[in-house]
Length: 209
Image (cartoon, rainbow, N blue to C red; front, side):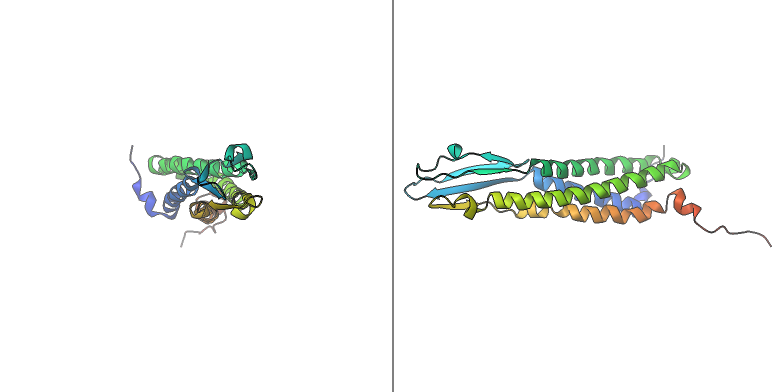
């Protein structure tokens, strides 16, 4: 069976490469992130550190933080649903990018000759565009809540403690999800041109003398 590598010189092939790369960038920045909050309180020479990571289900009661007796602080916040939604979208988008790229390479003639394949590809791409938009908005809200829940002024407000929170720059990059939405939306035009909807609207040319 012939492999049509030239498809990656076409817009639809190039876009699938971009989808694959940026999908990985989006979900990997969340799934691989580990943050922390540190406490250093008056009268206590030890620094207390509590880690948090994906899926960011923060339920750290005061008893676990073990601050001085006259000081109570807890870290509470569940942002797991937003994070899981975003990561699931990224993983599914990556897998679909791989799958459809294989179809382009190995079954391109069938893809072009069967009107159903371009239509299915177009509809699935629309669905992923919607998923990226909704999951990115959800995670942006979740990230805002996560920052607030670990804000030093919030968690250390009841104590005479110096509180520090890890840098969120890596998680800020995860807002690449909105870029993924634009990439998947931009690909719709190129896929639409492959469908019977577009080809059926093309003017017919009459041949003859």
